[in-house]
Image (tube, rainbow, N blue to C red; front, side, top):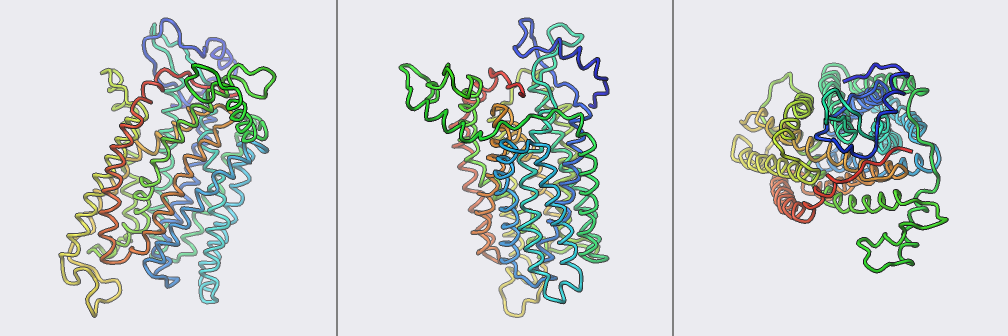
Length: 519
């Protein structure tokens, strides 16, 4: 997977790489990822270990240490999710207009690290006993960690993809070329794979440290690992492909739109066609085409918030559900999130090396819309299971729906927590199709100057999911959560069908598109 060729060979490859599809093209295969792309992947692994290792503990920490109720803990957790994605747009604008992706990532990583250190201090016994536990948590998580991770998110995946040169390269087999679109697709899968390696390790280690030692020590581990990730990332500074910021890209978008509105043409197929071929303007035709694609991608992204609302249940409602089920003493119930990460760690290479190549050889082309729809359908099936499981929990004794007088705190019914493995695994498989494809789609549809912005728009859809979760937190207690699960499942099921019939034609369009070359 790693390319170790020296600069001279890389220069030779550049000379034979072409942007247009060759006339003798039969099929494409993904190319190798360079060491510089992998340094970015390692950075993301460390960042996700820090994020998931820390945030997975929030729900139980807020309830058991800081004395919050279930609905309050759910609401605070969803506020954390909201802040982590609301700031993605800020990070994108700063990168595209002023600092560039590399410097922006370093800036927000520093802010993030400060938040992890503050979280470690605020969770120490002297801070909690002194009344600084909850204020310190809110400052660390909402002002620093949420702000920092949002600024990184909007740039790091597209920065990784920019280390992959656009175009086609011949292989030893006539008619078979390495296709940068497939290489980018592979890059995003392994990028997502690294996210889950990080989250897997964080979810295994941190809750156990909190259970056996202290939350302060458990929060210190993510801070140390993330510092290492920053050092690794900075080590490749001189070798990265870095796009210089163009400045005021959003103003450029606005001017391009206004020009198109004022210069409409007969027979145009898109309302932005009026900006094509404009003389003496700050944009070229590639930018206009990219803007058209980006606006179409935004329509696709409008269906994601409810998907993220269901996804967000893993960090709160799934944990609360597990706390009402019989489990071994050694298990911290939040650690069942490990199942989600483990399934992804195993499944992503299997899909990359076996499933998707086999489908391509058989002539099946799973375009982005087909993959996203598949992801939506899988998570709906998982939540049908969750809803039924919640109903079964309430039929078991001795506490049934936990509303009867005399129900003790931390009460559990006679049903095994291991039954939760199925929905965690279902959400994981859905991510390969829906989440990974969304990131890849955002990158592929945007022109060079808008890649961070469109990635931020996609990530911002998580805010919609977090807002839905904050509202539904009102009904996060027993037995109302049953109806929350049922409503979320039914609505996304209907929306998945609507989504497919609205956008299925996009798969044919995307298949014919030329990938934008980084400038």
